[in-house]
Length: 356
Image (tube, rainbow, N blue to C red; front, side, top):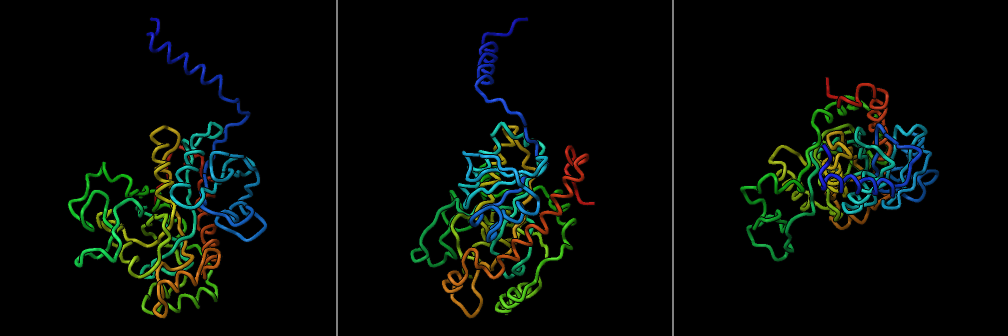
């Protein structure tokens, strides 16, 4: 049977499109994509950001230009591990991951994604230098806002969930209307990663010990760094302070319907997860193969002896008390997962790992 006119037109269109695409000598099929959010200076040989230890220690020596993204892709010799820097904030993250995911030089349909970067950590839940596997990533920017000086007297915050008229109003929107607000990570893969890495030794420096001693009223902030599970709030606005910490806890509890506990704050993860969700729908990736690892470079609020402003501006990116330990923790913990996935590829290519 001859194809229909529509079918013939579609076939002709695809043939024309194929003829316009460049021919690539190599299609890279990475087993793992490491996603960092920022770098300081060069990718290697100077002061490290989130990417440098991965480049140097995993030998990501090949540079693959990606003009539509924030940063070029880097790959190891056989292309089994690649890495990218998204740029800071949810907008950069979504744009960079979409650029990578739609690039025909890469086949990412079976790839695992490890988002690994630093974060503020709630002193009620853990100490600086700790590594936190994310169970829920919650969007912190999408909503309504009234300046705190103008909110009604009985409101706890001026942040209101999208399409609601007061803070934490119930009932919640239908699930299909709040997909941009909360991204649950694959729980089976998460538990596998946690069980694999929970005993990873983490650096505990004299500077970290001095820093955490200031948080006298927070027993968990006094502990040495450890590997945890918790929820991440992704907001492109860098916020800080006791009152916003309370908002973050409430906001995450609201959008996870009490299933998630806010532990870390970062700026990009819902943007990355939105892009991966869309790429999955397009058959270009599998968002169920995604892990988010955030490591505490600083606390998200002030110690008892400082104001919020003093605390925020007393520590700045690249100068956090836990900055280098948090970079070390991201690689120490994350690389265990990367190596396990690569070494177990005969199984994990078709079967997502689960905890025993």
